[in-house]
Amino acid sequence: MNILFCLAREEDTELAISIQNEAFFDDFKRYGFCSSYDRDFEQMKWIIKHNEKRSSSICYYDYLILENDMPVGNMILKDRGNGEYHLSSLCIITSHRSKGIGSKALQFIESEFKDCKVISVETPADKDENIFFYWKNGFQVIELISSHGISCALLEKKLK
Figure (cartoon, rainbow, N blue to C red):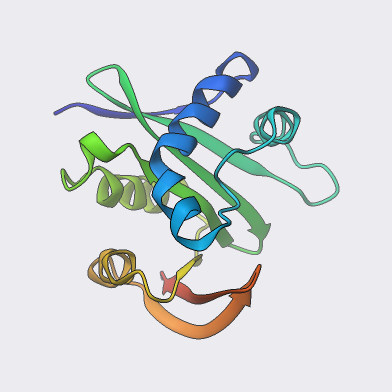
């Protein structure tokens, strides 16, 4: 299994949206809202345009995740500065889950972003499989928060 992480380009906007829609459809059905589901084309294009570019302290990294050259996931990482990164979205299409791809994505962040001191992520508090996934990858629940009326867990992993 060959996993690659490629920065998305503007021409990948529709592909990134379709991957997120497939991966997050069940969350949308379950909660009635998912910020990464049915993302607006212009919004996604804006995120991709800010790949690796600091603009008024905004810098995103939107990666397509490829398995054997086939797009199977998407990861959006926001650089908050001072070595703090927020994982805005990490999704793997259903047919490719439980193969270690998500764990490889987290390892990629740690190896690629040498200044990284903290990675944070939010996930619905009642999604045990997500909480377990992040826990087994070294994250801890920091607090429970409400996001769009959904009880979410804020998790962090401290490095260095």
